[in-house]
Amino acid sequence: MHLSRALVIWCFSLAAVLSSSVVKAEDVHSYARLDQVSTPHLDLVLTVDFEARKLKGHATYTLQRHDDTNQIYLDSSELVIKRTEIRVNDQWLPTKFTLGDIHPSLGQELIVDIGGIADKVRIHYETIPSASGLQWLTPAQTAGKKHPFMFSQSQPIHARSWIPIQDSPALRLTYNATVTTPEGLLAVMSADNSLSEERGGEYHFTMPQPIPPYLIAIAAGDLAVKSISDNVAVFAEQYILDDAAWEFADTPAMIEATEAMYGPYRWDRYDLLILPPSFPFGGMENPRLSFITPTVVSGDRSLINLIAHELAHSWSGNLVTNASWRDLWINEGFTSYVENRIMESLFGKRRAQMELALGYQDLLANIERLEPKDTVLNIDLGTRHPDDVFSQVPYVKGQLFLVYLEEKFGRETFDKFLRKYFDDFAFQSISTAQFKTYLQRELLAKNPDAVSTSKVNEWLHEPGLPADAPKPTSDAFANVEKQMQRWLKGGQLQIEKWTTHEWLHFINNLPLDISAENMARLDRVFNLTEIQNSEIAHAWLKLSIVKKYEPARERLRSYLLTIGRNKLVSPLYRELAKTPDNLKWAREVYEQAKPGYHPLTQTVNEALLYDKN
Image (cartoon, rainbow, N blue to C red):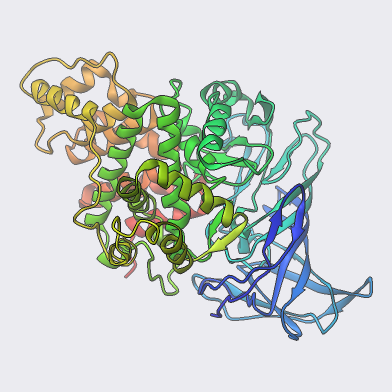
């Protein structure tokens, strides 16, 4: 492990303009020594080999030297390094490379000799079929059943499994890429994607804004495209294209609402790629092309807060980035806050408050389950894999910290602070320590009686929630609870105007001693076992496990076999693992589902289902 103490920050105006800025951040999850040599630009040439389930090609980096070192240190994970070269006086010369020992979380250190005057380094390599940051789907695993599909998931440190790279969010780089696929398939990246219907097999990409490595993304498959507006389009398999374009029609309005609050959208286009159901997350904020799970295409636009979340990352996360994975809350807490403000702006306080309250309930459940040290915002990970910090803590506790500041300083003052924050740190990566210094100077010192430094430290460095933390509630949920009590006594539910959020609150708060008769009555009247809304189905199936409601068992099997989103499947496996009979059944289902799960989904759920001892 090495300190990443200095790097070049690429600032963007109409094009990327080179300038330098010192970032002090300890990134124990990268072998990169950014204070010696950094890589502000990448040229990537890749061939997508579906038959071998590999990416093959080379990565060329522009070198930015900060001292007189003769080596560059990069991250790799199970990559096959073929050879390395350096450019000296416009000539490419072979050079030596070495690979370090394999670390279970970090992969391998890749050290390349670059001499004293080389201005570029090139690494020829290929991936392996089980690369943690790629998923390869057979034609049978896609909706169209005719063509294969491949997509990446680089966050947090999986970019190194498909590109040899300085895989630290403290680095920012621009990139160009040329990607070759079988003819008829479309490649897309987190870059400027063409809306052309041509599928010739060779595609060229440019990302002119500097991004951290985990935001480099790629996908290839039988994709079609449909525009929503001048700067928003949907890429998807044909079966879901029209439905997704309808579902996400409010995206341009979301962009306008966010710009009004927090300044201009600086990434030109904002397109959406609808992935197969095996995608392990709800969404991934890859700039210019967010990757989205099909499980939010509900047919009623009730789950589009996920789009608001991924869009919000265009300000919080992509524009201003956590400098290390200890600082994940800087990405996700700010984004969850901005997401909720977008939803309030477009759909009103009632809906935004329901979503905030549901998030708070999830956070409380996480805090109860997690070890106290893992409920700290500025978490001490050591060399544990940063995937371990992806709980509701950085998302919702981080969001509540900002809600707390808004309440103490007033929305108008806090909005001005946030807008200035996004401007002042645009296209930079910052640490929690840097944020605290900025907060003190720009907000606390100007309003000395509002919030103390000790209170800020409590939020950032202590486990759990402060005693005076906001406790979001919803009037709509209070009405749901009244109806629930009436229904439990034999009354009827008045659900004509119930939203997904109200259904989730209802199911999640049903008493655990609910009778089998009431479970059957609820299912008979509202057909919850067969409901197609994936979020409501998840809540109902989880309850059915707890209550041993056997009529839902086959739907539970089907659900686990067809959805790979971790948020939806891992709580079900966790619940099933609590009893021997259910654990045996869950393992049988998992082994059947495993080939269609992303490697990240496999890792999470095997930890739940199989004794590591």
